[in-house]
Image (tube, rainbow, N blue to C red; front, side, top):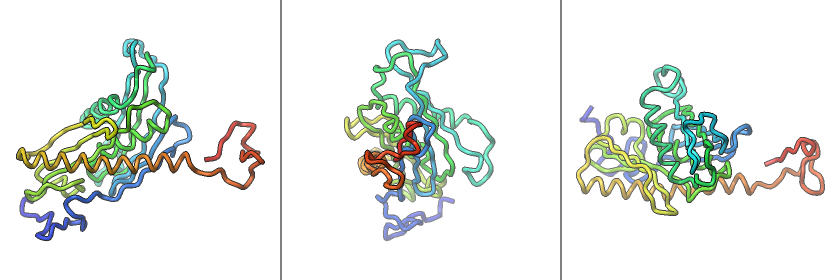
Length: 260
């Protein structure tokens, strides 16, 4: 597998991207009616949905914190999300990623406003194609903002890596499987704080610095997509059909319904 050329002499990768190009990213906010906040992301061939509930009372009293809310993350991959059917339920890797994402998100939330409560984040990977933890963090941060939970800033996440000895941004599935290294980064552009940093494989110090700068720069770009998703949701005009003079839907007013 080492002799497979993932990037050609002109700097083009198998999917025609350049070394510093992101895969296409689409983010939507407020996709679940029954969650306090939610988001959906398509990142390359990844498809991930996130629901956020809370802050709400934590019923496991021994886990309560008297000074702040606890962020609990459940990251799971659907059985049909990968090529070979996955066994239902969380595996060891999913538990590890849940913990890593919880720690990253907790740094972004002003949790001391909600003592003895829990903020529950459910990340469901519907289709996986490399970089799901970065996509999950990015979508989860949008869902938390959609829930109206105070934050110091949203977390954006992206990975850089090394293929055929060259540092590139945002590995796809083939590159991730047979590449030389991978460096996921979670970053809060507003405070310039790194809240997630992992490395798999080997970089020289110079390669590490280049990969980190690439990933951090991509996080700043992705932050703009996060903001656009929220602005799009909350700037939508009420539908004209079936509304009264105040712009409210007559059929839904009795139930308190609001059209987005």
